[in-house]
Length: 179
Image (cartoon, rainbow, N blue to C red; front, side, top):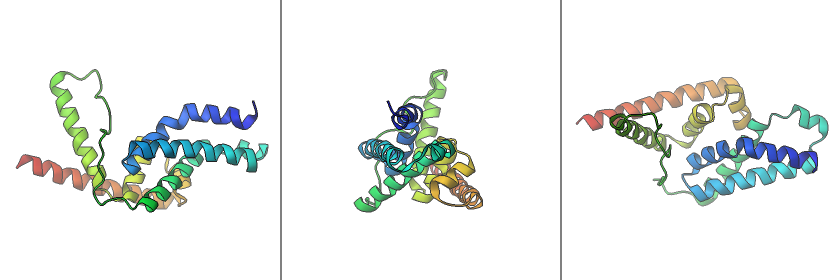
C-alpha cells in the first residue's frame, strides 16, 4: 500500500462522519451529503497521488484541507441545483437524545433540538456554515479560516454575527411558543 492510500484510509476513518454531518447540514439532503463525502475523499486521494510530495504531505493539516474540499463541493452542488427557497430537512439534527436523560427531560431536549434545527435552517448559508464548523465540527478559528479561505479575524466576526442572528431567531421562536 502506498503512503497516499494509507493516509486516505486513516483520514476516512477519522473524518468521514464529521464531513458527512457538515455536508448534510449545508445541503439538507442525505444523498447529496454522501456524494460530497465520497467526492471529497476521491479528490483528496487524487491530489495526494498526483500533486503532493513527501515534504508537502508533512506540512499538510488534513482536517481543514478535507473540509475545504467538502465546502467547495457543497457550494458547487448548491449553485448547480439552485435549491428551492425552503429546504426540507427530513432527518433531525441529532438522531437520538442523550440516553441518560429522564423521560420528561427527553421531550424537552427534543423540543430544544427542533427549535435549534429550525433556527439553523433560517440562517443564510454563510452563517450556517460558520456555526456548523465552529460548534458542530469543533474547529478552531484558524481551521475555519483555512476551510473558507478567509482571515482568522474575518472568521471571528462571521461567527459573532452568526451567533447573534441565531440567538435572535431562537428568542423569536421561544416568544412564538409562549403565545
